[in-house]
Length: 516
Ligand code: HEM
View 1 (cartoon, rainbow, N blue to C red):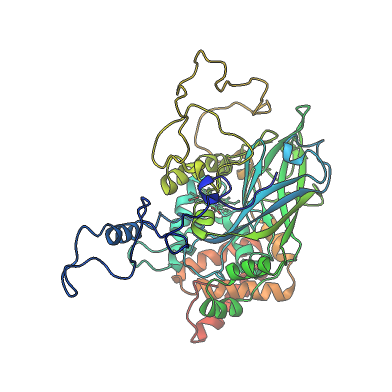
View 2: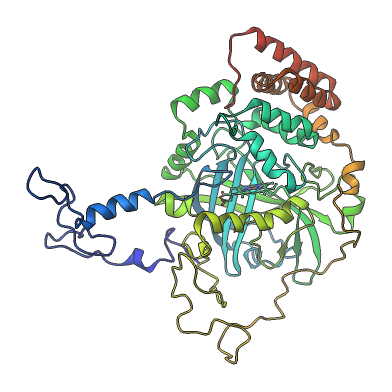
């Protein structure tokens, strides 16, 4: 399996250039007509008016007006690179996915890193979780691992996701970042505390994309070839090690080079200093799920490493920059629903909703046929089905073949009952209702954030408290007080330190920060 560039599926990209009489590639209109002059539009006389018959001019302007597609509603600012994943340890006892079938096997990948709440031109050094998406081009179709650089998330039911994002993006009236909305929402949703503490800790501003870990965050299921299943969590640990920027560094760099992380990624790959991550899984037997002290399907909680240690799987390496940002990064679309046989979902409510949200977003952002775009199409798993037509068809659209099933033609695609795409397991039936999970009510939401805070060095605690203070000082007093109460329920010292840092900030002439 090899993949030479992002346009590997596009035969046009490999065509020989069409030459003009000058012996050089000929400039053509979009429809392929020769262009004679690209400096002067067509006019009547030297100082005369322009003419509608200047197809080249009209086409250039019209095409320019259509250059933007909607940016991602979240994670709009980011960059990506190509590379490969190599299996380093045998995990066939855990997962039957062919990409893990033998040690040494390599699978081409495309990874995209991003920040969440800024627009496509936003600064790279903002305080925000980072997206960590990896598309594995396997012979069984693509596996998209769409994670973050944090093992937990702000909410554990996706019904709150649009509100979370509204509160962290721009105010509907002023179109400014809004500290009141930001902290109003978070202080009313204390399950967010674990993620809040990570975001305001030094890890909240990673020093570029190479120096952060990636996590699948949710619990997934791995199934082996005998049908035995386990719950798993994915960890991609940076071989470059963790490196962060302080608040002051982040603010300074954002004014000097807003594309700091993007440039760092491009330049290191260019130099042959290929970033890599070692892929580990935590493995939980299915029967442990009920017994474990934390609900394993609650996205605000981690599984302790001492309970479920990391088991190595392989290494991902990024060794090739994109050749075209729009075609490879902007048009890339990742979906947690794209799994391969052997990798399955869990009942995590956020994951279940995400299985819908991403394909839906891509259909809006890129068209219903976004999977035909070269960066999203899997070059190793031929797509064979009866879907046809729609905007942006880029294939032969099934040619003259029938577009319905069942049909009487045995040479056309047939479902194969031997291809089990779900491992049967018992899922407790119950009353249909809108309720938090039983264990969310019983579990202590403050215990894991407390462990995180208490395990920080005193230097990191200082920085965390200051980072929070510099941000929350922009919010109204009653909102500040409510969030400090949330901190106090976690740890007295955390609340005291934030209060002290806030008092200091208020005395200073510094403005509040909505960046780093
Ligand atoms: C991007 C929805 C939670 C990681 C997106 C996009 C949507 C979305 C609509 C834009 C997709 C596009 O336009 O291509 C949601 C919903 C969530 C949720 C409804 C429910 C709470 C999460 C979580 C993670 C995550 C928990 C990580 C564990 C990402 C990443 C991207 C993204 C990495 C960028 C993908 C890329 O690089 O193109 N999300 N998200 N999201 N989300 Fe989420």
